[in-house]
Image 1: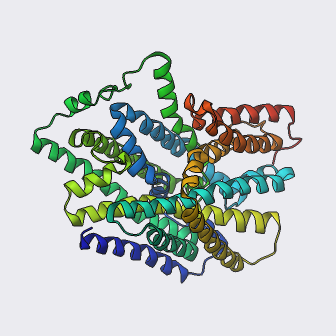
Image 2 (image 1 turned 180 degrees about the vertical axis):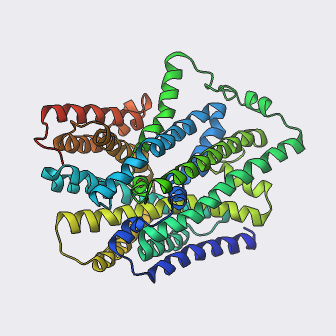
Image 3 (image 1 turned 45 degrees about the vertical axis):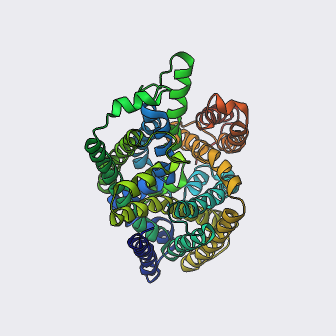
Length: 477
């Protein structure tokens, strides 16, 4: 790898660390550490929510999938885009208002205070599910960073993973939510720049070579030149439903995303954040799709061993080293922003939801911040160890983490927001069944027919409604 790229990556990593150090010097309360004290501007929270929501799968997984499948890959991005739009239009205000009403610092805490009779059980169940999935999810992000660096530069996977993971742990535990949001903001700009620069460079190369995009897609075969993949009937319906099922995970159930809505200060900031988030998402998704389609024209299938590395391959092939370094930083930014937010969710679940609220350990605000920093360090170290020891297992867990966390808690949130008859037992049953069904469905032959990302949502919805009707609450919280 060119020396200038190493320098750019080093500068980027040091900048992230500097932000964490800056907030360490601040006198943070526990509300500052968990939600930024509701003082952060809406546009920064929007950038943070978007950077957190779009992890390495956008740069590697989604790009690789569309590169192999062709035009029909657009439906994955469509499902995600609809989910982002729905969350900002219909959920962000409710999260903001409810946080002010109940003065809570986490998604788990909010669900618990709505059902005081079952608050302890809900906190324990929700926290355990979140910590279990997110520690493995965090480890997967760490592993992804090490493998990305190795695939592009040959740098040792173990040391690459450890170095970047330590930086993430450092700035996350130093400033908590404050430093995570501001590092996310920088990272979101890098991600945005990446999906503007790459498709433009790729299109210019196509024009210079006199290539035909439509002819290349036709030559790929397997319906690559069709928006529906050449499918019809049941196969078409299954493909559309599976790809669009990403929508369900955005409906308020991802704690690392809902916390951004809860941190909004007022309606003016929410609206500015909403507008910024939707524009950012549209640009990035269109850029990702065009990059993938242009890649099918420039590089025949089989050009590289791993299709998920087609974007980095394009970057180094089409762009000068100093620009390639920026794009590589953007890929790392996508992973780091998600990893830091996941680490903060784990920290909040353990220190705030379990130790402070459930076990009722008496501790001052500053003491809770110190405790949270210790928890963040320990959780991060556990994530590193799992990443280095069990990489292959981690990625199988990640496959159903979206369903296990996103769909389970999405159903809970939607029922609380939009159905007055939801009960505490209904919520508990939803969490338990959601956790189990995500695992069982993902590992069963049914996954090949209908994705757990869709099935888990509807299973949880049915369970939540049925148990709420069978065992209603005497009085709502």
